[in-house]
Length: 316
Ligand SMILES: NC(=O)c1ccc[n+]([C@@H]2O[C@H](COP(=O)([O-])OP(=O)(O)OC[C@H]3O[C@@H](n4cnc5c(N)ncnc54)[C@H](OP(=O)(O)O)[C@@H]3O)[C@@H](O)[C@H]2O)c1
Image (tube, rainbow, N blue to C red; front, side, top):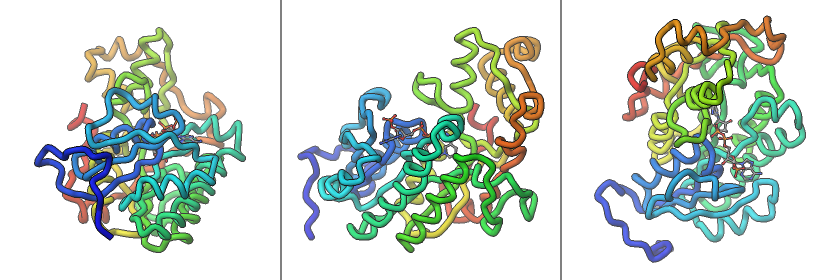
């Protein structure tokens, strides 16, 4: 089938290396906004779909188009695919807040479990490549087999969020054997002034004169959100399928990450001690819901990627 020029736009820069069409589901989110920007550099056009597209920060790239889409209206999905005719779909839409999932487990299962499975089936039927975003929080109830969680570790979540994301992974891979599921670690970095993600949320809380809690006993392998998006777009243009882990090289506690973020914004150690409360999960009664250590082993992925996965201090 001949590929028609989408939206009648001219593609103007040498950095557009592909005429392929990317559909980003969840384009207004912390990660989604970066996927749209990175995708626009590599794809011929990008369809940026989310429930409230007006939340997309700033101006869409010239070769991107905003599409209102409600993931809970499954009937809309066929029309979405028929209109966008994507060659690649990245599912970054989710109920991503742990507390929201605990409050409303049915919606968590619907958005994080069932929805990705339905999208994976549609991608298969429309002949589009499917990349689904999952999380390190599918782990935590059992220790890893090695030093960090690898691809042979069976999922064992603690939270409603983690359980719903495991269901999403399973449904995607059942529905579409060519799909790629990427588990991501805690993301930090630029949220374009929206206070989203591990670093901007901390800075925004301090700006509001709050004294946020940073856990000293929650260990993560954090990754910059822009770096994650660049790696995901590279993977989306490749042909890897099944499960992959993306993660940063550093293993840090959330308190350690918070300290690095604040130091990079000019806070002295004394100011950091005044502005945040470093606590254990037990002190806040959250041990049963929040895993201590979900560090991901991304060694297999790194060997397939040209995009380097950067350490916290390389980015901040
Ligand atoms: N952030 C992290 O540290 C992290 C770590 C590991 C994995 N992940 C995974 O990465 C993915 C993206 O996370 P994120 O942090 O970018 O989440 P986010 O900022 O909460 O963004 C979620 C996106 O989903 C959309 N969405 C939610 N409900 C929707 C609905 N009913 N219909 C259509 N769109 C809907 C939101 O659109 P509206 O705002 O318009 O509702 C938003 O665009 C998720 O799969 C998450 O599990 C994130």
